Amino acid sequence: MGGQFFRALLLAATAREVFASCAHGTFLQPRAEADGAVPISTFGYTGRIGPLNWAALDAANSACSIGTRQSPIDMVQGVFTMVAASDLTIDIPDFAEGTEFENLGTTIEVIAKGGTLAFSGKSFALQQFHFHLPSEHLDNGTSQAMEMHMVWQSEAQEIAVIGVYIDVVDGAAAVTSVAEPTPVERRGRFMRGQEPALQRRQNGTAVAAGTPTVLLETIFSVADAIATPGTKVTTPPLIMSEVVNLIKAGNFQAYSGSLTTPPCSEGVNWFVSTSKLGISAANFNKVRDIIGFNSRFPQNSPGQPNLLMVASTFAVLGASI
Image 1: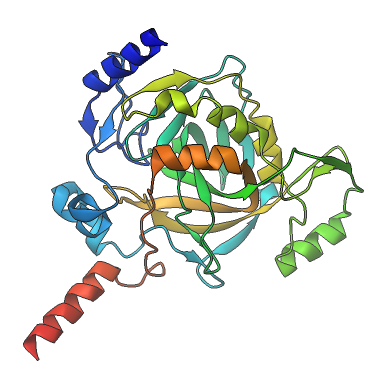
Image 2: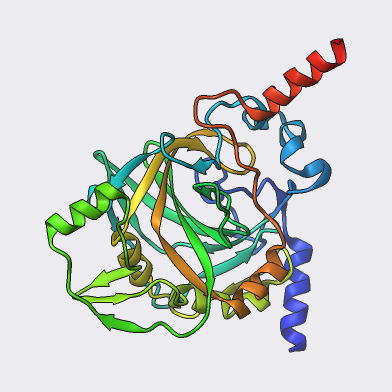
């Protein structure tokens, strides 16, 4: 116990303060932790370092206040294109030996050990996935308990993010045998926006909505070890196929947006899943105590003026009256 506490203090003391953002591990912020240090973010979500002032923290963050395709947004009809899961190829191996789980100060992040995403003739490699509380995107005006962001990068230095909502649920994952829907039934559900009716389908079985996702329960079982920003721990083995199968059972709401953290770079390919993950109340409370609050406020619809520019314009007009 004492050794673990000393190690946490040592890592925290040697942590680097940087803009540890949603792009951590990509070309925008390459991972450089050979010295064992975990970067700690210098931005935040409240006060002077919060989203309203991100652009003033660094000249590189100008898109946060003037960009016109900023994320997150409210996922309502007209702002996204519905993409069938079959249009994306997602392959993530199980992390049989576990992987590093870090506290960046503004989020907790799992480092990926492989994974590919392919769409429109482009291939992306999974870099990491991290968590926001509450959700950053709104589901037709409604905030969700949490949101997981899976961050991918192509060789051409393009970024794609798969966002998955997380609900607080109770009970164990109950597997129920169901009949696999016919292609006609699936197409009908897709066109009506009702697919998936179940969280996951595989070999004629399904896990109904309202059950904890084993992957999340496994990851967060060791979250106490990284309660201090700048610390990290190795997770137990992670069965990634569970989440891959779950999101493949749904569809994606796609749009071109931005990073949801500084530098708010645009041109990010967003795919918000219609499937949802589940987290137990106990683990939600544990994660909330560590993360606190780390969601950027919803931005204007893609292509519309930045809300900070809109507010500034009205402020100027009001002052001149």
